[in-house]
Image (cartoon, rainbow, N blue to C red; front, side, top):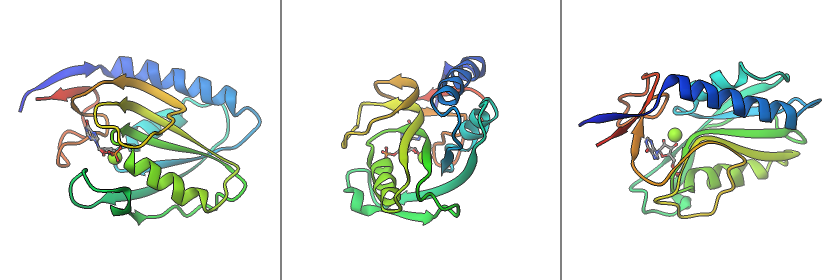
Length: 170
Ligand code: IMP
Ligand code: MG
């Protein structure tokens, strides 16, 4: 398979700084809980929190969807839960890419049951091609129409995750 550069590490770093500065100003005086969705969001989350000027807490959640992406959100399951209580706290969910939206809508609903003060979504990439449920991405790095992308946490069958830049795979 051929990979073509889409976003260089310099471009990603600049975007991460922009998002961090926006979040720092929106959450001035607060201490939001950043919840990273494993595994893809690991690099993005760790770069993002290091650019913030506010204190934060961090935790991780993991979900897997069974079968093809044609299935309903009922097929999404949590395989690792958060450990920090979120009741009454502002939460920022951090994702690598929103595609169909099924994973995030499942995780949002699950977290809403624990009554956080608020939940916002921060995704490095928002991809529209296969969207099935409406998702409001509050902090978005890049928008793309279509394509399968890898690198900076994004994988194809667990490959390419470690790459510092983002590529389109063909
Ligand atoms: P969805 O929004 O529930 O369809 O799922 C989003 C998840 O699908 C992401 O967290 C990724 O793990 C995976 N995914 C979707 N599109 C891509 C892509 O272009 N490259 C790599 N992973 C992707
Ligand atoms: Mg993922």
